[in-house]
Amino acid sequence: MTSSVLIADDDVAICEALERSLRFEGFKVRSALNGEIAIEEIEKDLPDILILDINMPEVDGIQVTKYLRSLDIDIPICILSARDEVSDRVSGLEAGADDYVVKPFSFDELLARIHALLRRRSVVDSKILSVGELIVDPLRRSAEYYGRSLDLTKKEFDLLHVLANNLSLVMSREQLLNRVWGYDFDVDTNVVDVFIGYLRKKLEIGGRERIIETVRGVGFVLKK
Image 1: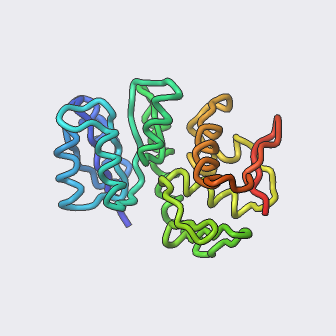
Image 2: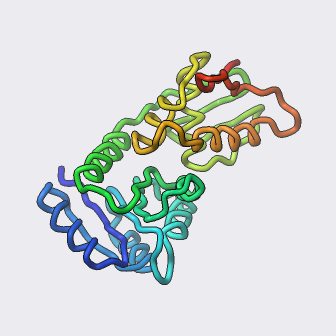
């Protein structure tokens, strides 16, 4: 089955080059030159994956991502950006993006990431996980702790699901980067640490006991 791609970038040359290359690889491709048009295209015909520039007129890539996630539109989103700071990557991922590619990039690298995102989307683990008072439902993408629903972003949920699915096993930062975000970050980034911090704040409200522990020099583990 042919996968469809929407490219949203105000750089006409990038759009045209990506359109040609992706069509050659067998994808159905559309383009939008700003965020407002991208949203209109998505509402008209939902693509299988969105390639999204951050810096665009009218509505930028972060705003597009937040808007789509607020509507529970769960298509994979791969951000393109000239910004390479960890804080920029965290902002994109926190908004709900699935991957972050820094410009300039090679087409082969982008293509590999597109295939990886589409593969991850096609694998649905339906098993509900119960860890003490924590319940994680991957089909509904919901989590409860002590009977209270947790308000998690897409990446926070994915991270919690991976930890819960590997209960009592120490997961290295590299493993978490690969399973939650793909293979696109350098090992020394602190993106995992930042999102672990977000999860802890939501799990430890009211002084509840810490269940995500840090194993110094190794990674993180979820315990009962």
